Amino acid sequence: MFLKYVFIIKLIFIAFISFLNAESEDDKALRISTDAYNYDKGFGDFTSDSKMTLRNKQGEETIRNFRGKTLEVDGDGDKTLFIFDSPKDVKGTATLTFTHKLDPDDQWLYLPALKRVKRITSDNRSGSFVGSEFAYEDLGSQELEKYKDRKYLRKEACPNNNDLECHVISRVPTEKSSGYKYQVLWLDDTTAHKVWKIDYFDRKGSHLKTLFFDDYKIYLDKHWRPSVYKMINHQTGKSTDLLVQNIKFKVGLSSRDFNPKSLSRAR
Image 1 (cartoon, rainbow, N blue to C red):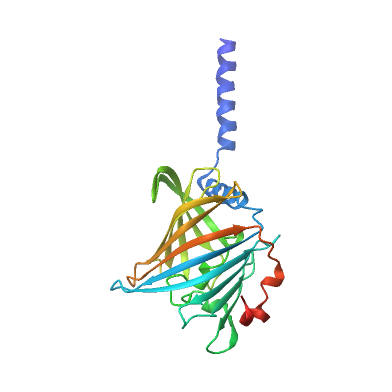
Image 2 (cartoon, helix red, strand yellow):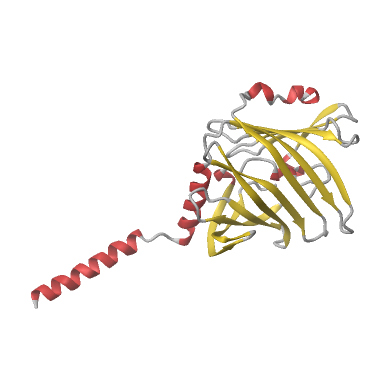
């Protein structure tokens, strides 16, 4: 009888320890987000060529081509530069973003027609990026500290890839001037936790946009990047597709390549 009571007490103790160590849904959402962020660290820098297709509600298309440069910054967010090459009406337009972990991002826009560099204020970051369905605040790197109140919602098949299971997680931007009240992400259950879809909800909580990611490729045996992005605006019926090609890592970029004072001469 004594051994029976000892066994029962042991089971209760094990159950109690398991309860204390149980991961909450919110902790799970933060862990997955942190793992995804940490997995991609160490890429250094990369360049790319992109084709942007803007599509209005009637399906009419406008094509734009631009180049991108990204520099990983130790202890802070990435630096990103986009330079448009065509068509003629946007050629020479350049956008520079310094993403920050805690502070609002610094962003500058050079418009050749005005021949001046314009600083994009926090209040204007929800505006359209060169007429596309991407906002200026969508251009920065996805730093962990830029979001709060993460919640684990469910697990289901990944969009665009039914062979993978995705964790569905919601998050709230920390920046008060953000154009989004919250976002919902689909991250796969692989080690890299690649993002396959993001739903954006406006400040009123209405579904504003959806961004789909597709055709992932791996670089340097570790860093995954999608080749296809598709942003759909559910409120206007417009969409923007991005086809990203010629991604090259470790090309030797430095902070000198991301100078707002020389944005008008960016090449």
